[in-house]
Image (cartoon, rainbow, N blue to C red):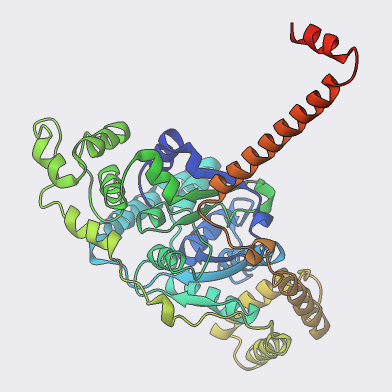
Length: 422
């Protein structure tokens, strides 16, 4: 997923573009969160004894647990998350999606083999490779967010492209995702590790696109060509060209057309009918919703909706214990976990009320305004600060001179000053 080795390229050649901060450093910031990437991470990471969390009937709930807990963590740290879900994948991505399907099929066969021989390490390894976000799981996560009053957006295409567009339009401060092609789509700021568990104690990595371009000495168009050359989800890369060679070629020839014209084709194999121009256009002009028309607002946590949802689940249990039992059981487990319920404690209305109150309190704290929002940051700030410092030094120098002049007028001081000067 994303751009191959881009993180290493930035760390090696533009380290000033990466800053590490705690999660609470983004208090008061609105952040566009790549929901599809987050769900994928939750299905892999949120586990118990190597297995995904599930209901008694076997329905997976890891994505719902992760979505609720991580969202609560962001809100309690003052962050205003806006989730963005994937839309229809670009046609250029069909080959990559096909490859992923083949890899999952291969992993499934190896998972069966590992299960037969009892290799627990291999079982865990291949079970994670089988992870795939379904449409049902996506709709379930949207339902949880709706109950929490957290806004979400359905992107027409790639979620990371929509996140980048929202950052460029100043609708949000940054895009929260571990997919590095969000930078390629033009997001000014990307936050990595936002969806990680608090137990991992991983700092947030804040990456600035402007600092990346400055460190590499590239324009955005040249940076896009570099990403295509490194390898992306939308086309193959040129075989034989590694990370360092790709950077050198872009610095020398500045675009892919010139690179193709000058490289040794006996040494480097260019893919047949390589659609690099179409991929470049996809990165520079992605299919996104007009941010000026996006209606994004945080709704109050509806205690009555949670209680009504509980009653609806109870009614479905009485009426139809079949298929609806699966949905009832799944969301009952989720609400119990998210509102600090215990598996063995009754599912009471009082607990729903107390849990909703906890979420409301967290939301109230996150509505405070950042102090830097009251000040206008100017581009010439460093230059102005430098001038002020120079004036202070000049003033101090004049004060010292006046004190020396005063001392010279005092008897016996002249001799001491001459001695000190010598």
